[in-house]
Image (cartoon, rainbow, N blue to C red; front, side):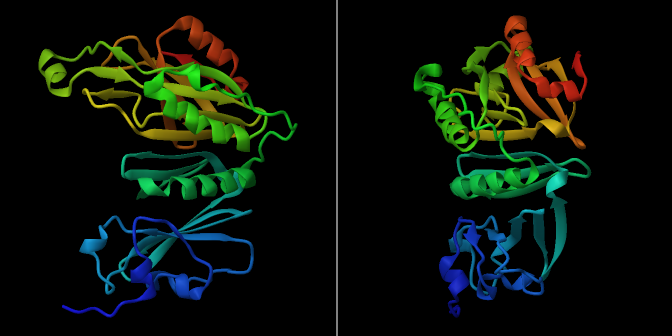
Length: 302
């Protein structure tokens, strides 16, 4: 079968592409009144389909995102049309993005209502980081006292977790006033599950993390899951920024299936963001002392 090539088809791939004029808009979204000269950042997010399985007759994009000083507008394809969700900048509680090999995500947590989660390619990390920065600047400008953020030496974590240090560094350059509150590496931990489950899942490993705090933000760089299993190295990365003013509570609970691991659960809007911590009361108390933003909620030990 022969298809007529189009500019959209020629450009299609796993990349998030800018939308700068009407010709860039995927056909399912062409009824929307975009502003191309108003300072908006507009991008289109491709479908999760390999190019070899797609063709020019298909809808090739599932979302169009608009970021500006007012917040985030998300258009989601629904057949040949679309639905719209708007999150005002004043309603943003947290933003998370990350990747696990080829699978990526971009999640915005509002103070009210369900979170918005966009699946993206793992290759789109730089574009998503740019969207995150612009949204954060609209929601709560970076600490503006001009104090440089605390640097982190490469040797702060062992080789297996040096990616966490490398991921923190550009965040520190873009954000003033951050202080590193906790740095810990991945560690093997004992499972409390049955022998059969332990044999099937393999060795449990608690993920490492870099946690930094500022006047207005809590920044966490860690892995996709608090605990991973099996012999393969965990190459995922998870970037989290929580706005201090939007925290409504927090709790520390034991991990349900491994020893020596706690879960810090941060309440943001209708959701909770979960971060794994080593079970070390001294270190946890020090971390919590460095998190004045938790004064906006109730810290609960369970």
